[in-house]
Length: 133
Image (cartoon, rainbow, N blue to C red; front, side, top):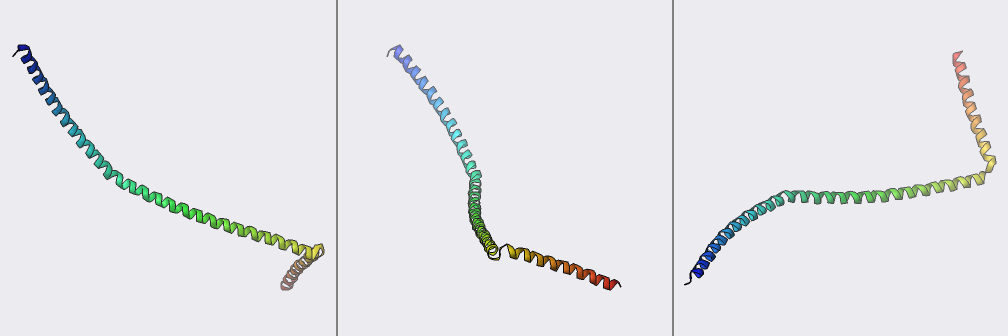
């Protein structure tokens, strides 16, 4: 064979051996990186699983609280509506009483209340003087 052909074959053989050695090194490095990545993923799974479960439970609790607040708000609205209705009834009743009894009854009732209060005061004064003497 030709010396040039032999030299070319030797160079090709050396390059092939060097590439094979380099590929083995890269493959081993990839294997180590894959192992590290797998360990990292495993640790994340172990750490994140309880956290995700706690987050789900917290969300459930928040949903329950929101539903309770919505129900409570509806009850408060109903109560306020009933109170408003009662206030309207009281206003209507007051208007009817004023229209029935008019302006004459109110001053007469006020006068009677005043006379009664005055009589009580006079009675107390009278009984005190009697006890003192």
